[in-house]
Length: 143
Image (tube, rainbow, N blue to C red):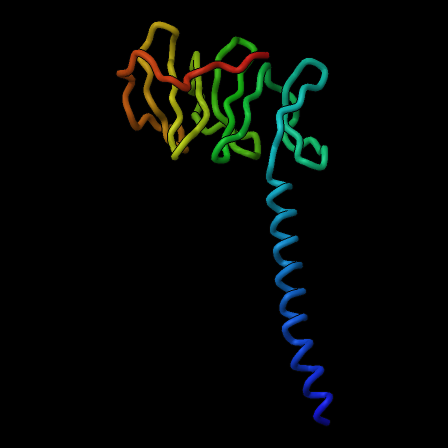
């Protein structure tokens, strides 16, 4: 009887460790599935996951990297807007001449090349009105 208790006592920590390992592996796998990468198919850009499955159908003229759950994409007229990981626009039809990655919940945008630079939030709302002449990170993605 005493040996049985010892085996159960020793195996309980091992079982807990195994459960924790499986949980961590599952979460890691889910995080990898949520990574989306730009991919060009037949001249249009879309997004694939780390397993190579197309998640957002290629329909953009250019596609930036996702940052904080959003990516800037370019339409056929050369204007940028932001999408979420389902491919849905978050900018309510608003487009920009230049659009930077999100950082700390904000993204720098410029409506026209000669306009000032402002910032939008993750909902696409202007939170800092355009008033800056330049922004170090402001860039445009190339096709």
